[in-house]
Length: 319
Image (cartoon, rainbow, N blue to C red; front, side, top):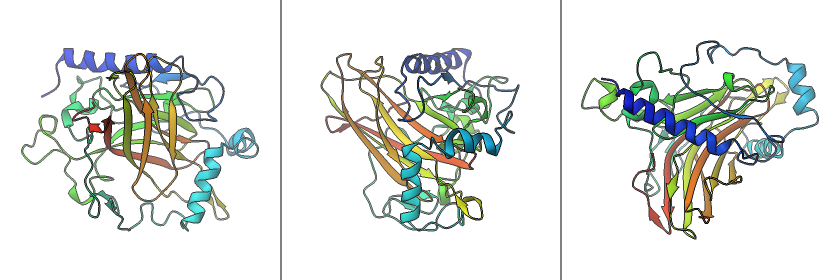
């Protein structure tokens, strides 16, 4: 059973609105993405070319000369420092077999911490475009969830066509893997267990933008999201490039041209980002969850369990 044409149009319009809000904002991407980045919507289906395999790939010399040798973002330097401090090895394993307060390896489970008041866990199958859009419009590698729409920088060096946005069934659900849900074999009518993934092996800057949320001007909004950056390891035996990172942005005025960011650098395990803003005069705000890589890395960044608190009160849904 597929969503109606009306549902598909509403979902598409939501994504286009998100991108329209981002287009005038040079600062909606994390610092050091370059001046006036050209941001575009990423809409399904992408068939010519398909996102996998990547096309028009950059040569190692291009990447080295344009970015790594002299223009490496400060965030990449911080990501490298965090990986070094954590003593990570060369991509072995991609995801650490480690128990923390919030996770055990791939499984986000909160064994030693209170479960958060989540408003979006990316679990509802019917809200994933790949499950609900009409046949011919869906694309497993160009996915979005409800009103959370994909966007990417497309400036020649970072090519939106080479970024994958997808529904993830393993990293996050982990040992609770359940793609189709437990009450029916028809996946798009029940909940499964999922997270959201952004990935590429080429330089990229991309994310999912939330719907617009409404709150009284002056409201304190705290946003929490969990993320996992895989420990992809070295590009060569003597070159460890831990240069990709995750970001959580909040636009305190949805129609404004700025966003406040925090970045996430921990890799190989589930971690958390938090960002607090005061809602501006418009009474409308939005959230951006993003990944960025300045080089040709095996970058895979996962997001799950979004919580939004307005003056301390959690939203029940945010999709």
